[in-house]
Length: 471
Image 1: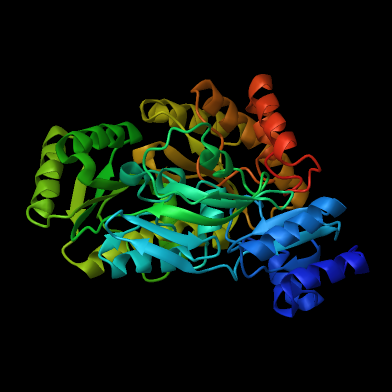
Image 2 (image 1 turned 90 degrees about the horizontal axis):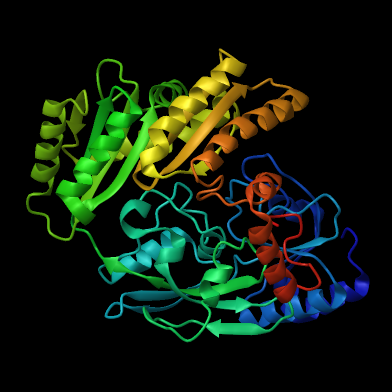
């Protein structure tokens, strides 16, 4: 049981009962490591509250005893934000038992659910009333709404619908001292003071525990049109994006970019995928339109791409002719994380840039990295439509830990300095966690960081919420 005092264990047991505690070492193991295998630690105990009242009781106890707490959802994060440290003193607060869909209001286009609800279950609940919850991630079958909100998750549909912050109207939050903020308001307008909701979204469990949320639903699309294009350079894709936005408007849902080395990596390491186009193209894009009206959508995409081909914006294109073909195209895009895990050790950069600055950034970053190491493997892909690149550097699987750490520091400085020069962000959708914590301190202004620390100190004076992460 790590460093947990017997009296504290008794108090936690009284708060959540037998079903709410995990004390066996083997049973705790899944909560103590992240799915990437990059971060691991030890927890004194795993507490799994069944409702908001139990969560509040747990936080009150931990606040009084200065016991550090790491809140965890589906444990699918990319930045080590939900993993305990090696001290054995931290309590993992798992929200997986709080997974109810509390209410669905199709007239108001809202859904209220608990933090442990799986994203896929929320999507299904919306579909049951002919509505659509647009947040879509590769981990949607295992990630939770609480984790999505705590990290302000993005995904493939941000271009049209926005990230998790834009899809949330209200929150219920247990504060570090056990008080509950009942902010489950299903309102699109509420100008009654500071926006506390946005304070907790993206805070990565450092300010409080999100226990429930009111989510925004949209009319369910009934038609989709999907295409894959090849282009000579990334600037051509940026131009194509602008053309499609002008011609298609809000029907443009996704515009995903994949560089040639990224596609080659997927084809090498992911089974049952094949190249959509013949010939070599430096950059590729997966494009999707969606609409609540089915008529003419495929024709609109086809004529738009025909114009782009005639103007030379793209070199080749193929339109999906069936649901199976669409699924196959998306399988390519979704295979990139798996391919990187199999191929080597990735130095990951989850960056956001003004779309107008992307081409210059890629040219400068490619040149700077290759000047340092000519044979470097750059795996560049991402959500071009909203300016979010996953600009990664892939090292061999057998790279020693010391060499990996040295290369990571060197690559981070090159990439992040260029991002900062373009007034971008070093964390777009994966969160800061422990992966980018020190990097963030390097790039935040003193005023900005001071304001963050003042907020943290005000809400969490005992510094128990997810220590060592974000701030």
